[in-house]
Every structure is written in C-alpha cells, then in structure tokens.
Length: 308
Image 1 (cartoon, rainbow, N blue to C red):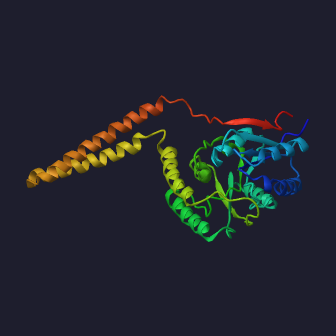
Image 2: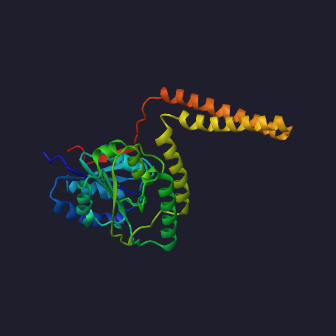
Image 3: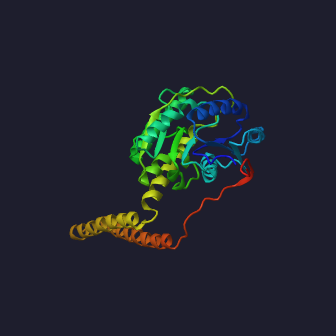
C-alpha cells in the first residue's frame, strides 16, 4: 500500500501537454528532496491537445501521480476546487503547469508556513511577462489591496502553499482563484507572502488578457459582499435605507419650511428608496436563513491514479 501523502500538489492544466514532461522532472526533484510522502494531482481543464493522455501516462508509471479530467473548460477556480476535494495531504501546494513557477522553491514556502502562517502566497517580484501584462497586474493588485485590506503584492500568483483546513473552507468559482488570500483572511487564517523566481514561458500560449482583470474587479466586489454580508445582508441594506430615510426626512422638512417644493419631491423619493432598502435587507435575511449550505459540484468526467 502506498504511504498516505503528507504533501499534495494540485496543478490545473489547460492545453499544457508540451510543458508536462519538464514539470514532472522538476516536481519530483523538489519533492523527493523534501523527504515527505507526496501526491501530485494534475487537473486537465478541458484540454484539446493530449494533456490528459500525458497525465494518464504519468499515473500509470508512478503511483504518486493522479489525474482528473473536467468535462469542459470550467476555469482555473473550478479546476482547483476539484483538485482540493481530492487532495489528501495536510499541506497543499498549488502552482501553474507552464513551468514559470520553480518547484525548487517549495522548501522556502514550507519554512514560511512553519513560522505560523496558514497560507503562503508567492510574489513574482521580477516578472518575465510582456510589459502590458505586468502593468495590468500591478494596477489590479493595487486596487485589490485597497478594496480588500489584504496587503499582498501579487494576488495573481498561482504558486501557494496551504494548510489543509484552509482549502476545506474555500468555496471557489468564477475567477475567485485570484482572491483565495482574501477569502482565507476573511475566515481568520494568517496569510503570508514570499518573493519567488518567475521564469519566462517557453512553450505553449498564455490565455490571460485585460478582460480577465476587468472580470476580476467585479468578482472582488462580489466576493467582499458575500464574505462580509452573505449571512447578514440586512446590515448592508438597512444601513443604506436608514441613511436615505434620514436624508429624505431632513430634506422634506427643509423643503416644507422654505416652500422649496422640488426639494420636497426629492426628499419623499429618498424616504421611499430608504424604505425599499430597509425591507430588501429584511427579505434578504429571510432568504439566507432558509438556504441550505452551499456545496461545490465538480464536472469531472474521468479519474486516473485514485483507484490504488
């Protein structure tokens, strides 16, 4: 019987067949050097280039490799969630399959984790990407830092290590893989960061562009609303309602005393909007109270290496 892994490595891959041989070599060199039992879970996110066939080959040759195949391209967050569900290790690494992350830095992540952190994120301090992508990433990271209050340099870096209780607390979808440190911080976990080497992409094609950052901003606002108000939406809606109601009442009184009737209509409208916000908050609380707990449902169509 194979040893129960202490370390799990979860790697989403979409059309990365050209990179997987080098990735396997680098991963094995790093993990065997650490000296703890490990598993490597490669998640094929709807590839069309033979990525899963390569993963299945690895699994047949080495029982430490396992593979999941998604029915279609479901996105990095969902692919990670599928891998997290399958991971057995108390320590879980994630990194990209494009060989831009360096597995030899895994011991540095573990040292930082042992210093008392629950999640350690990589910081691509010197990026080997096109200048427009670097600029977009810096703008994105600055805005997310300001919105979330989590002071990391690089939210986009997929190279991370987690304690298993962190990944069990996550509910990932959309583009939420970018905001895992924000989600973890909201749950009370201690989040740290280390600078990492970033290699240029040699094979394959990047699929990131400006449109992903725009979607990311919208997802961050949604995430912050859900993480802070999903279980108490009345705190947000009734707050707006009270502000608008008080503003409308003051404006209405002023309009009546000064015979400023256009302001009176604005005051009445503010009171009505305030009442709408207030009752929306109460209805939202009722809806949340009656909802069953959310469960992630993966779209896995094939598994290899898990039957051992």
